[in-house]
Image (tube, rainbow, N blue to C red; front, top):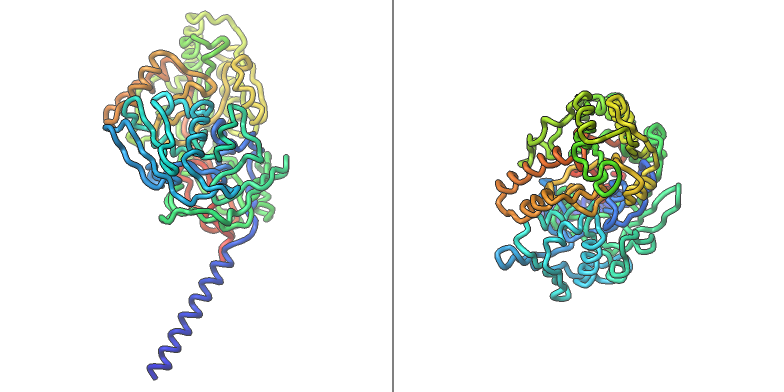
Amino acid sequence: MNRMRTILLWSLCFLVIAAAGAVSAAEKGGVLRVAVIDEPPTLDQHVVTSDLTTMIAQHIFEGLYTFDSKYSPVPLLVKSEEMKDDGKTAVLTLREGVKFHNGKELDAEDVLASMERWGKFGARGPVLFSNLEKVEATGKYEVTLTFKAPFAPWKNLLAFMNGGPVIYPKDVASGAEKTPITPEQYIGTGPYKFAERNPGRYIKLVRNEEYSARTEAADGYAGKREALFDEIRFIPVPDVGTRVNGVKAGDYDYAEQILGDLFDSLKEDPSVVTTVNQGANQGMMFFNSRAGVLKDNSKLRRALQAAVNMEPVLQSAIGPAELWKASGSFMPESTLWYSKAGLDRFSANNPELAKKLAKEAGYNGEKITLMASTSYKFHYDSTLVIVKQLQAAGFNIDHQIYDWATLISKRGDPAQWDIFFTHHGFVPDPILYTFMSESYPGWWTTETKRALAAEFAGTLDAAKRKAVWDRIQALVYEEVPVMKTGDHFTYDIYSPKVQGLSASSLIWPKFWGVSFGK
């Protein structure tokens, strides 16, 4: 009897294991079709801060660090770190056996070449490199960062994917400059590999069968990453109605950037699932500090700032009140960085003050060129309201509309614009804001800003850093390198058959660990 019971138990165990294997096999496979707002200009993360680029590229490329669900920077390609010399030296040991998509093993020379290129030409790289004495490959799997002085946000800068220091093979990074790398050079270490770009139709990624995943449990963007789909296709679908109806009809499995006025109906629609990103987006107008009528004229910028009322801007562009907040603080109330500094100037809605300041600034009706894109509908809708408000206050606004790739190209030339509209996602550390980088279009480089930025980066004490950030935010409202419209939360939709999606704690949905379920 005991023998028969043992046999029966083993048989049951075998059936359970076999069933589990069958479930696992059923969950792996298929093609995920993601409807995106447009074609990205490039997938090169070093030199472009496009969110569309990052959403796709994060599946291909990886950095030394990433963020967990609590916004803490944690190792990704790094195995361990050691701080020396009272915080002036960071010794990073890399994980061994990590392979690029071309089969080459990642080592310190790849990291060095990638960081040097990012530090020289990257959107955020100069923020870190201006505080570095040197970066060295001190062993096959060891990289040493030597800082001029203790530099508190270094790990956050290395962890932030958007415009960040992803690691390319040395032979790609060492030959690249500011011009984006080409598709045949899209070689990373991520769970998916770049396979094909069919212009106007899709960007195709395929599973990386030799991916070296971390062993920790998935947590935010950290921990284990597993490619369950055979392919992911990112399909440009500029029309939001087509994206929505496509998911309902089964033509797409996921669609991003859905209009706010559809939110209430889609929440109740059983044919789709809605997902609201946790991290707030911020509409931002960047002012040209290098050329044009706004160069070296903070009073004229404050005049523009005084004319705008952000509530109708957000109502028009975003829709339901639960998806936006007219907040002028650059960091949300839920963080230690929340600040009220300068907020008396946010959303002033004072056209008379705007006219007074403009006169004092010497403004005589010169054309002010404002660029926006229809690729992000809320960009266009926001600027429609803003332009009307500015024109009502007496400003001569030339409202120029482009697709996203064209706008990105034009904003690199200071002679072509005075203001451009974009948006910025939530960042765990204010140092990651693009306006903090002198290389980002807008090129905010005043001496006061430089001094405060250096003090902010060189202060390790959290309370002291917060006090300096208050002064920086006040300076933003004084010199107006950028004007924030408020906070808003984007939402996407997907088919109920898609399983495993987790909340996007930053703003980029991620598709590793995701499948079509059982």
